[in-house]
Structure formats: C-alpha cells, structure tokens
Image 1 (cartoon, helix red, strand yellow):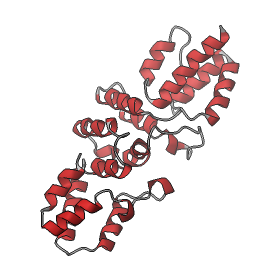
Image 2 (cartoon, rainbow, N blue to C red; image 1 turned 135 degrees about the vertical axis):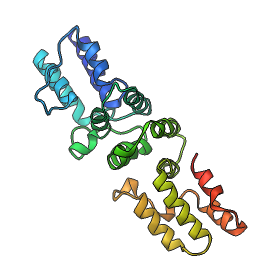
Image 3 (cartoon, rainbow, N blue to C red; image 1 turned 180 degrees about the vertical axis):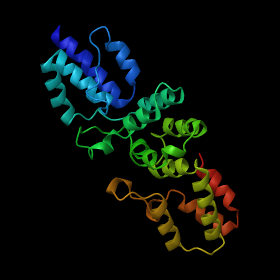
Image 4 (cartoon, rainbow, N blue to C red; image 1 turned 90 degrees about the vertical axis):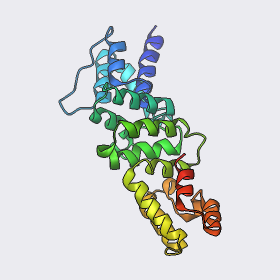
Length: 239
C-alpha cells in the first residue's frame, strides 16, 4: 500500500512539473488526504506541496527528493504547456503563478532537477521568451502561440523561434523593414547575421542563432533574385 500511495504523490508531483495539472487541480485531488499549507507568504506552491508531503510521510519526501535530483521527466511537455496556457487564459492561474511555473528552471539555474523539456522550442518559449515579454502578451498572442507550440515537434527550432517573434507586432515590423532593406541591397549578409544574433540568439550553445542556421536562406536568395517583395517571405515565416 505504501508503494502505491507514494506513486500517487510521485505522479502528482511530476504532473505539476510537466504542466498537465495546475496548482488548483492538485489541491483538489490531494485534499482528501491532507491540506497543502503555505510555508510562508513568499513560498512557491511546489515547495508548499513538497513540505506538506514531508509532514505527511517523511520517507515519501526523501524518496521524491532523491528521484527529482536526477529525473528527466520534471520539465514542461507540449501538452503540459498548452494546459497551463489554457488555464491561464481562463484565469485559473494568475500571471505570477503561470510565469513562476513556466520559468522554474531560471529560479536556481536549473539545479533543482535534471528535467528535460520535450523540445528545444518550448524550452526557449518558457525560459527566455516569456520572461522577456510576458507583460506585453495578451489572449490573442497566447491563442496563436498555442498553435505553434502544438506543432513544435514538427518545426525546426529556427522556424519556431522566428514565427513566435513575428507574433509580436513590434518584432514583426522590425524584421519586415530589415528584410526589405536587405532585399533592396541596403543591407549585407553580415548585417543580417548581426541582426539575427541581436534579435534571436541566446548566449548558450543550444540556443545560439545566426545566419548559418537561418532556415529561410534559400527562400531569401530566390526572392532577392526574382525581385519579389518582402511580404512573401514574412508570410512564409509566419506559419
């Protein structure tokens, strides 16, 4: 019985890290067993939940702490991220709760767990894009972004990142005018490389982005040769 009960808590804990269950959903499921009490007014829900498990059965807590340190399944999945976005849009999650969940890896430089995101695109979305832009994102953005996230396992990382940034009107205008200048011969390949690094690249090996990995190089070359407008390229990038 003890093993079965521990697995019950283990599955709930993993579901929070992956995003398939939100704070309120976990509270509802666990409420017949115990109340999840805040450690303090500043504590995060997951810490409150872990500490409540510790009070309930200390061995369960230590088993989880050992598991979590090396676990790969303690990071956002595509279904989990979509579920949390939907919960946020329906106001089940506050902005703070949503961002704290999505950006957990930033809080301690990734030392809490060895969790691996389902793909690099949603890792970029959670750890870099959201912290930078979340104050300016509305329901329309999240609805469109959800489509990209759904398709993220089929898209190249570069395709996802460019399409995601194009959902921001300011970034779309910036890319439009830069590429227009490029196609008109006012900007060089070196300028384009610098632009991509400035706008998209993250100073980490897995997230570096420049002209060498730009997924639309051939299309850009053809458009420049044929004299087509920049609109056709932007349309292609928007997915």
